[in-house]
Image (cartoon, rainbow, N blue to C red; front, side, top):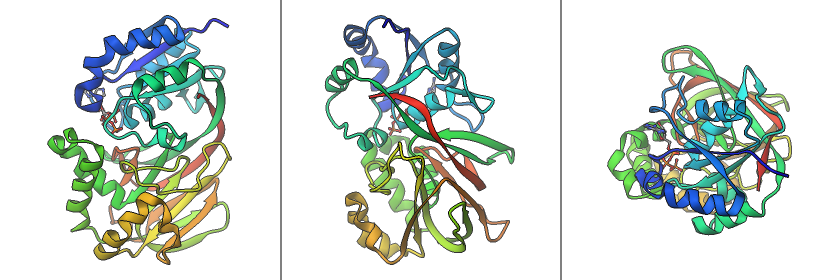
Length: 317
Ligand SMILES: Nc1ncnc2c1ncn2[C@@H]1O[C@H](COP(=O)(O)OP(=O)(O)OP(=O)(O)O)[C@@H](O)[C@H]1O
């Protein structure tokens, strides 16, 4: 079968490494998969403008049936968003693939990809499409407008959202690598963060007000530059894995940070995990600002509704 392939390239990801390496990457991708058309991301992200989403939609409308995101977790998320318009896929037959060239690389870990870029390209050459679930999130953007956004990996709120905001401002530390950026951002923010009372409701019958440190709604397993937040999440089971860390103090964060990387934090009595197809969250006090995180970006705040779209995207893997 001949494919019409598009690559959506974020030249700024990986601290600018992707842009510099793109000519060489393009040659290798072409060798592995055949000819492709490259589209560059356009303009910096805002809550209503995702730089990789527009080029993705354009590529799909131009007839692409395989769209490869080339960038970090942020770019992967934006390309996934570009697959949908008005709540529907632009081309339900089109497949998605990603080549991680970012500083972090959380989404790929769920699929056990941790090799070099050359290995990832070689793998793509032999890949086949199989469906994964996608999350749909409606929330309040910074300008107060209700906004919808799709996510492939993990959307969360609480400390994670506050950390994102800090990390995205910490330009210099990000150049030193994803893990360091998140460690630094986490450290600074954790010092000042206090758990926030949030009413959490799910379609599976959970309805409680909890003092949330971080609540993750997970399709994939990793976030925050390598934390195994949802060790049992499966991106193709039609369900979110929900992991709530409640009432954690500064000391807990430190003593449990090692286990977060191992995924053993679920045994902690301050952690609740459950599965659901829909989760709604709103601050117990309507004036409280509880920040969201989607794959390393902080696009807005609660109240929010997270809804799973089973088998909504064909992932080439
Ligand atoms: N054309 C562009 N001009 C300016 N900024 C851009 C452009 N395209 C994308 N960006 C920015 O790139 C960021 C996304 O980067 P991405 O997450 O893919 O890479 P990363 O930060 O290196 O990796 P990771 O998230 O995996 O650590 C977004 O915040 C977006 O604003």
